[in-house]
Image 1: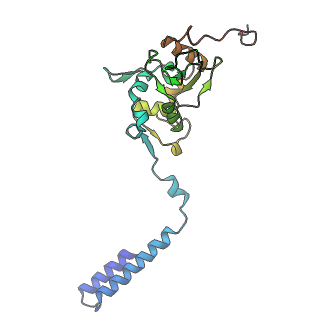
Image 2 (image 1 turned 135 degrees about the horizontal axis):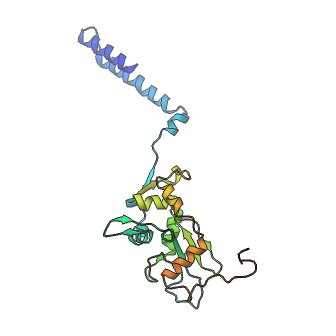
Image 3 (image 1 turned 180 degrees about the horizontal axis):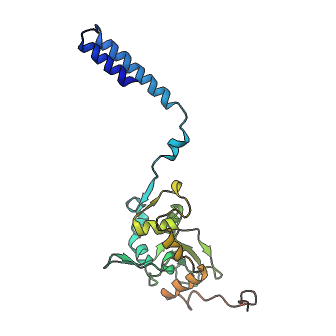
Length: 221
């Protein structure tokens, strides 16, 4: 509508039929301005909301506290620095914390370890809490001995594998690009993964022990 009116005004000016061109242009601009205000005041349609582009969380935008630990997290997931390829394993998805026992070394308590930490390179509670808030790891579960374990979510897996994932508000379960690969790695129970990572860090038999077999926990024959 406004394009046609503008072309008409230009034609009138070129033909010498418009005696006050500035006034005509000003009135046209005023009409366009009012129409724009009226349009923006209308409720947005469902189609417009659905058609918006999804938002993403990319590696470079992670909080500094997480970025500082990024390489250690990737190594735990199976990142090979030389080949620059991943060889992910089920135990690479989890982080564990030993029981908060005052008899255990203070430097180990309140720290989280992955499958390649070697009992030394660890992650703070603050780092793990931030990753949980970002939806990259699940809420920790307390084990039978007081230790804790948390597993990477499908979105954390996608982020660390592909450097980007959907933002929190745009996530639909099972919709990540690496979901099939992630699902194949999540068939092992958390207690089993807890013990595997504990063994990798040299904690088994010293700080963490297998769950004792009781009549209630014994496998049924």
